[in-house]
Length: 147
Image 1 (cartoon, rainbow, N blue to C red):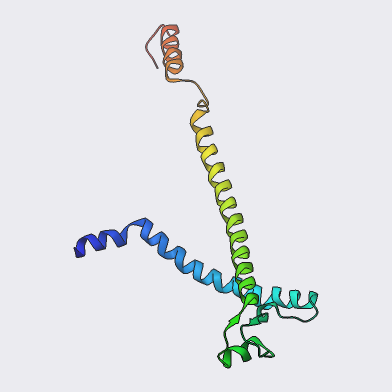
Image 2 (image 1 turned 180 degrees about the vertical axis):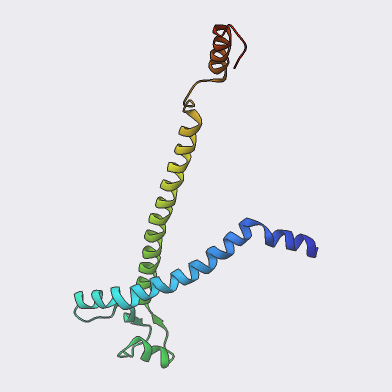
């Protein structure tokens, strides 16, 4: 069983998947920073200083000044601002991944077409038969021994 596990772990697909998960986790933190540190302030500027991620509806009659204050008080809230930001994070990741996959597919298509073009192109220079015919003709035209 241990041998099978070693074989499973050493397969290329498992290693590729592991690398992909680690890179994905790092990529997620970069996207979160882009959205939180760059996009949110721009949205806040366009909406007159409102932080979209703090938008909420308290599910009680008491109004709290911020989402954090409502959560600290233990009030149930409908935090639609955080949901909107999660959707925005998803869209940013999806767009970046779309362009990344598009670029990889384009590179793979070019490499595949180059390989197929190389296999289709006739070789430059004479064929084996042409060379042998030329050697035969040279030997026939030479009356004496080759010097």
